[in-house]
Image (tube, rainbow, N blue to C red; front, top):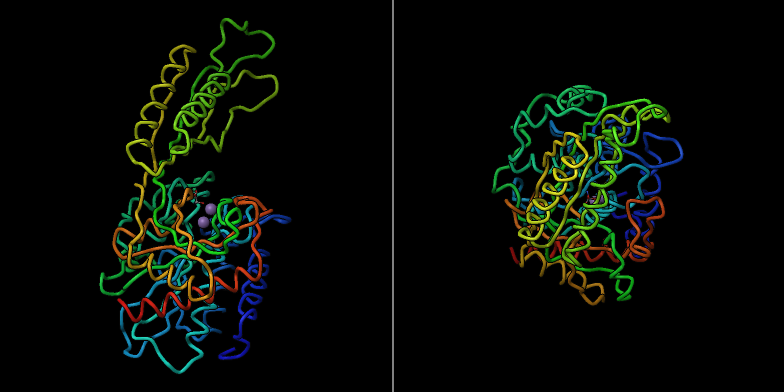
Length: 416
Ligand code: HGY
Ligand code: MN
Ligand code: MN
């Protein structure tokens, strides 16, 4: 593959074809669902590893299932410009969220490997596996493990079947060794993540690419509402402690608090679990999740407090027990000006006007930014649709993204 077919457009075509191929690797027939450390994730790891090898990269898998491909620079062992994103997905996902950044990174690395003029820096492409946090009550475990932010006990969290991250890693035959995932400061010079915008702004501005300046902060809470299960036919309305009716009032309260924040706040109840979930039983217990985000940590934390107060007030009124726990929190993250400048230079180098955008969605770049200078490149996505099988990008835009990424890497190599 070295050197072959790397002219304009062929890179975009290969990226799109590979994303189609990768989208076939799923836990569920007829839709794309690929959760962290499932057999489908393992198959996707093998696939991206094979593409990395084909590109001429040295490939390894670390103990938390990151697939890492390395292209040495002029001097072996030089610090790396890291290009990454995630290959895990939400349930019934689109094929571009996360996967685009890995496949585009491989394509860019292959182009750099295929020419004689070597860079000063190494280039590494990394496929993270726990960005969505959909299987385990965890988040960004794989990218945060590079910085040493993950503790051994963080791998004890269990999925809905009671399987821990640690056991799932063992199930993939990966050695115990979180410490081995941690990278030395000097190992990495910069991080760039190419990702679909997951919003409508680039389409509205008729622009293909943007440099991301910041990522909204986010918190995830899990709530348990305990009432009393009862016979739907015999328990009078006035005597019920109906966990689902209480949870429903709480869901509306969360939405109201989110609305009060205008364009500076979003609050979502995305998952509910009703027990015993039977047509003729007054629900005794409900579990649900809350996702709160804002560009301002002060606004987000104030909203989290307001939500907690509302939950307990409704619980008291309805005589149900409420327990709410924040299990994930990530501050709003500013991208590094130098890397933003490199991404903008890369976008300009392919004849596009560099738009600057903040990200409402969370990304692995949030995990990397506290330790190494990081930025992102957004790619236009049709009607801003994401976390939805209708997610779509064009081949031309994917080709522009790869070429802009190559230019950004070269810019960084010359300026870092
Ligand atoms: O939730 C997010 O923002 C990301 O898609 N994991
Ligand atoms: Mn993503
Ligand atoms: Mn996502």
